[in-house]
Length: 488
Image 1 (cartoon, rainbow, N blue to C red):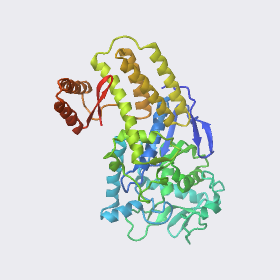
Image 2 (tube, rainbow, N blue to C red):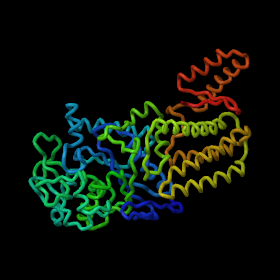
Image 3 (cartoon, rainbow, N blue to C red):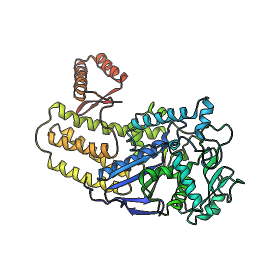
Image 4 (cartoon, helix red, strand yellow):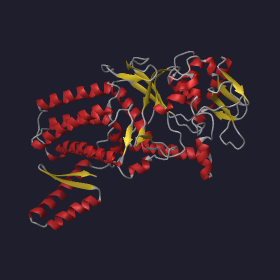
């Protein structure tokens, strides 16, 4: 596939600069994003991260790049303090439910993908599990020991921070600043308090453990992503993504252990999404202020949640409130109603002919502005503004009642490309396999019956039709162009 003209610029956390995106290969992009730790249901914070990187993948493919997207599943080794102390999060959840940890991992891995599917998040090309790559993680730790960058202590293996002068380059922290952090474990096993675990000795009763040269144990959280990223994407990755909360210690440690083992740069572009907040505070399971996606889906359609996330830049916080979701719902209805109106022209007998020249010019300008926004570090909020400007133009065309098929088709395909293919907003009917034309015609018959009842002053029957439709999730709206219907 031919690469379109590339004016894409991204903000690289490593250099703290806006840089033109130029992958290592002219036509291929290798992208790794830290996946979920599967011990509970995904929440809105996960939606922010994975929708953000889904749009990045979609836009890169739109530009013509062959993207290999790797997103891991952490099913072992992520401890409750996000560093080297505490319990394994999956084992802790399993003990609470009195089941095997792998049962917890399987359950929530399936539920995670189900939730992402509903949000129209594309599946990664590769979804490696940490527990399936233990051999590679052991070999990586052995290589670091051989190169003098790691040491064994009482059955555990630690990275020697003093051996790596560049440690702290990503986060911008000095080692002294890191020591002041609350999550640094002061362990007698470590040569330096900032050293981090590559391999942990399994305590008695620890279920998830494997044999190693240092005894029974399990991998450290940080080494998992390094090993899986390099296994599937090579020694140097084009893009490594994740939440901003992972800059330190997770991604900082990834860089150190990767580059110390290979002598090569680990990642060219580090991209980090900001978090979802509630009243200005981070949303998270540990804080108890999170809303699972399944609970959110019971209140708002998945595409409303996706639109809500896209209304803020991926590097900016997204503050959650029910009012913000309701506002996003109104915006979603505008998009869906417009898409439906354009689709109906194909069933309802719009005029023949080519697209109107004025609409062609508007679409060309909209495409230019949309791509300009996405080239600016994936500015989805600005891209959405362009899409809603196009909604106004489409509704103007629909309101004239004389739109040609060519005009409707141009607008429809533009919405499908910009809103659907790139932003991932599913503008189709909600049920799979539904006959869209038949459904629309059926509702048009009901609308006609209601109108006849109103003209006959049989308002009870007219209200009954509206009420019955509302009960099954169909809203009727009386406008100056006539009565329109939409899904709630």
